Image (cartoon, rainbow, N blue to C red):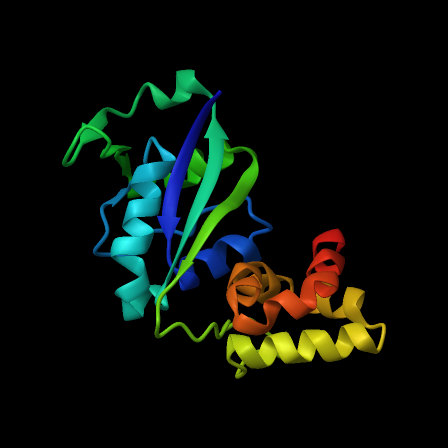
Length: 186
C-alpha cells in the first residue's frame, strides 16, 4: 500500500466530501491528467503558496491523503516537476474512475490552509449555504448551547469538515474549546 496526497481547493474538497470521502471528482474538459503527489510537503506547498490566493480554490487549500496498492500504481510513471520534492504521478483523466475504485480506506483531510479572503461558503449546504464561515461558527455554538449539535453536524457535515480548522484559528476560538471537543466526537 502506498500513501499519496492531493492538494485541493474548497470546491474540490466539497465534491470529495459529498462522495463520503471515497472519490475524487472527474477532471474538467481542459484537464487531461489527475496528479496525486508523493509527499505531504509538496502538497502543503501547493496549498499555502497557490490555493490560498486563488479565487477558484476558494482562497483555501486542503491536503488530502489516501492510499492505493503499489502494484496498481506502477503503471503510472513518476514525474519530477521542479525540485527533488516535487514528485507526482500523472493519471490520465479517463483512468480516474478506476483509480478512485482502487482507493483503500477513503480520503482524509490532513491539513488545511486559509487565505485572507477565505469566506467558507459551501454550495451544497442547506442552512449554511449563504453564511460565511464565521457566521456558521456562531450557528454551531447556538445549536450546541441548545443541545442540538449532533443533528447540525450531520446536516452540515461538509461545512463542518471544511471549516473546522478555520474556526479553531479564529481569535475567539480559545473560548470554544469545549465546543470543538464536542464536534470532534460527532
